[in-house]
Image (cartoon, rainbow, N blue to C red):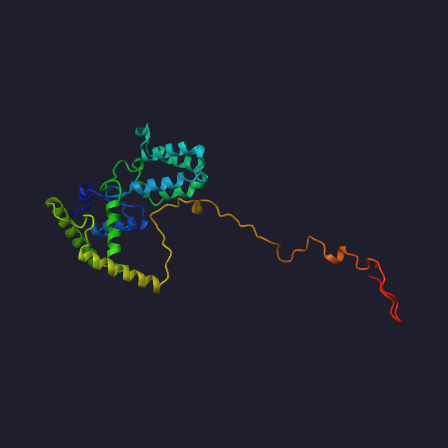
Length: 292
């Protein structure tokens, strides 16, 4: 990769940016150790070459504070102030250090008890050192502030490749073709010629064939296999369903073996009681007149 020693890589590498996925973080650390032959018992500062995405964190903050059961309305301003302290964006951010950072984390746990699992997720496994500058000594490096470009490329790749798990060769081939098409479109726009982006223009044959093949492949997979539950290891628990305790559903009806609360009909009706007949029928020979 152009660096012979880890110290050279750590000082000159511009940095990589990803989301908060623990799997991606572990993979990056494994790749660094394997490339530079660093033993597992030797500590390395990942924040010198690895950075987490600011947009992912802000989205999670928005989900949390939009639920008034997690962040009460009258505490919303206080919650936003504490988040600004963590991000070193409040008015007195120049005084935010590691001690104040973890003190603010503890205040969030205390003032917002339902957010314990949420804030704990960001301060475990040393993931906070790759995002919060207050606990990384300002050494975080990475391209930009978010991973929107990478995620957009990944979405294009998944929608265009017919396989659910494309190989590295397919990815490289796709990226080459995509880059060539973008270059052709850019040159066409500069020269005033029609490109794929012009309204009413047809899809490029490569895109058209790839999209058709991918759609057919996905429809066959949905028909022959069950959809597996997706678990995102790069997203903190930030919904009411994950942060609030489960509510017990009240059972409807009587419990098994319970006695009747209402008395039985035989207990309240005197079966020996009868209404006297009010008129007589005509006399029949050999029989007493009946009453009705």
